[in-house]
Structures are given as structure tokens and as C-alpha cells.
Image (tube, rainbow, N blue to C red; front, side):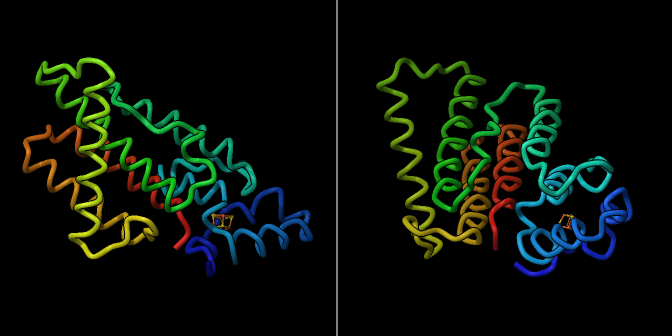
Length: 193
Ligand code: SF4
């Protein structure tokens, strides 16, 4: 990755770290000029915006960053929809992200059925539902001429937008679509380009 887009304005380097220039240089070389997606400050910025980043958050405090994001997201989850956990967001790869999209879409369908008071009875039907979701994802990936087995971040973003449109055409409630679309796009933003 190249320079972080916040490198010119990041207040971190104006704080206490400026008195330890050797450490500041190490952070700059590793996070700001190379691994922005692993930076705790950048992670919170992408999810919550500039105002959500605590002044004292160090770039290497990723666990603290993920906790902050998860707590904030839980606060906006008034309907108690399924939400990705901290473990889900650790060590993301495109394959792990693809499988999280399957899980998220599956949960969204369950939430839709529950709102319509059509329950998913027992594990057998849940297996059928998840098979249907995987089939739909494969179909969507192939319709967009993308690779299901080796997806890129760009492939997955395109697939999520298409799935949101398909869900809307089925009559999935808007709040369920928007909640899951946002959490998936936030998750995908964490993948390197
Ligand atoms: S500390 Fe993090 S947010 Fe700030 S410029 Fe560096 S990579 Fe970007």
C-alpha cells in the first residue's frame, strides 16, 4: 500500500509521540507509508469518521480500535440484527470476507423471514437456506464475471452492491438491507487494495 490518505493531517504525530522521534519514524514507516489497513487509527477513522478517533489511540492498538468500532456499531443496532464479531474482523482475507458475506446474507434472510413471521424450522431448513445463499452468491459472482474461488476486494464490493439490489427486488425490508450492507462494506474496507 502507499501513503495513508491521512498522512498530512494525522494528529497522532503532533501528540506525545513527537518527543520520541525514533518511535514516530518507525510508526510512520510501517503504518503511514506501508500498512495503513493495519493501523488502529485508520481503522476507526474508516468506520466512525475523524471525530470517532481518540487522540491517544496508537496505530498498533488494533484490538482497542476494533472494540471501539464494535461497541459503536452495537449501539446503532437497535433491531439486534446479526453483527460481525471482533474475531470475524481479525486476519481478514478475501476468502474470509467472501464467507462472511454468505453468513451475513443468510442472517439477513432469516431476519426477513422472522419479520414476516415465517420461522426457519430446525437445522434442515437452515441448511437449505444457506445452500440457497451460496448458490445465489455463486450465480451473482459469475453474472458479474468475477471469480468465486479467488475473489478480490473489488469483486466482493461489486457483489455486495448487486446482492443489495436483488434483496430489494425481493422485498427485503430496507433497514435489514442497509444494516448488513454497511457492515459488509465496512468489513471490506479493511481488506488491503
Ligand atoms: S497513524 Fe494511521 S491514520 Fe495516522 S497517518 Fe499513519 S496510518 Fe494514517
